[in-house]
Image (cartoon, rainbow, N blue to C red; front, side, top):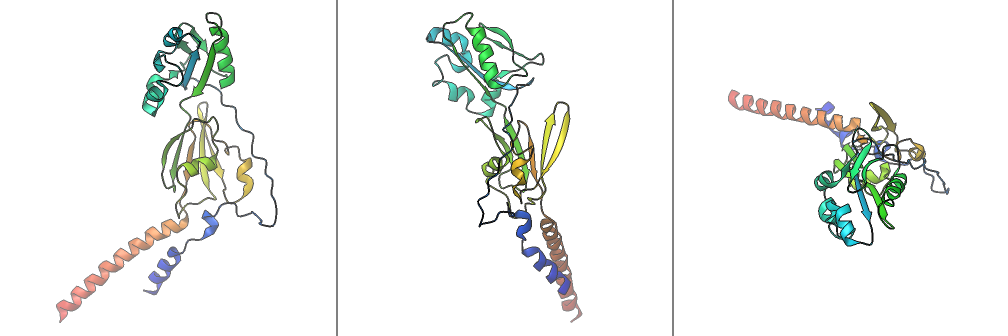
Length: 256
């Protein structure tokens, strides 16, 4: 019994060394940290894009933007792009040959360009046919999968252009009491290879990490601490002990 009590006691108290973030912070100092450079996202094959080409002519807009209902940015956008499913259906998917096909403008190659460069290229093409067009290009498939010891695991979409690893933890409502913040894992796809990065949230080096700013389709995993495994084992021990105790009581009653 003594050994079981010690196990239960040791698993009932959670150490902050694994779950407390930024442990190297000193209250008596003003610390200035320069985060890693914000990445520039390039368009890749199979990306799903929001593309809108607008003019002052409503009739032309209806032809250029049939997926928006043709009424401009303020009407139809929520209905056509308000959910991941509608974004998948109504977005412009970049083909394996690097292009998208736009009404009137035809095929435009966008792979390798950032969003500003894509807007400028489409605007230049549009100016061959239209007067004073304006263009918007956005990513619709900037999603992050976060799992493990997080309160609301799942897939989260980002529409602001950049997302850091602290933001995604906040979007998922924070970590559980068993999160091992010293060994957080980020998996990232580069071409046909998947790279694995380990992130330590207990010190400020997180800001200089290559994965501080997340990329589309990153996978973030927060592993459990050893404490959780011990707690699970102690629960098993408790069930075994309870069963043995019940059997002993039954045997004692039968021997009377």
